[in-house]
Length: 195
Image (cartoon, rainbow, N blue to C red; front, top):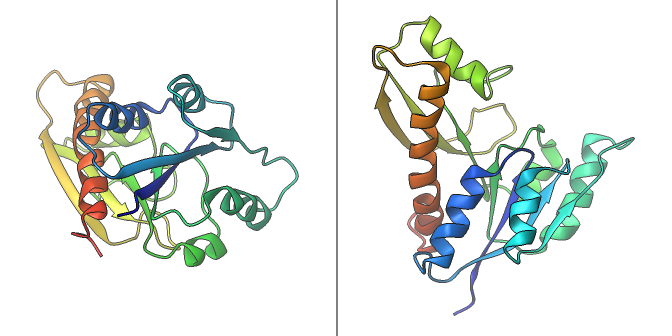
């Protein structure tokens, strides 16, 4: 049986990427192969991948339309089974989303439909959760479509917002959920449990 090939698109630190790599190295992702990590920035995620022996490329977006850039990205992807977005700070073109329809997943640090869409990324999300005095928050893994955080939800996991929580402590709690559940969702795809 051929391997289930994943590619990661990242623009930031790659903490979720590290969680995926850790599970692979621990033998907990049988049949899953990380074929390439791509980024629009020279970021820590690329460094992590390279240091651990994975193919990783920076693709310069300068002077390219969204379509042109995404077509260049697609050349590196070949016939991957799943594209995993990890802190990827670009909106994908309609062409790319259609080309890899239902093969792209992303994780968002809130319980979609709350605190998502334009402007809601990183610490902005946790700040909004605190300001709204929410009792719980969490993370959502979803299929990427042509909208912004609008695709079908694959999995949501919650955590409590407790007295004394800060933006940073909420970020830590939500990232812990992401690191646990993102690899699990990839396994579910590889086993054919998610169509």
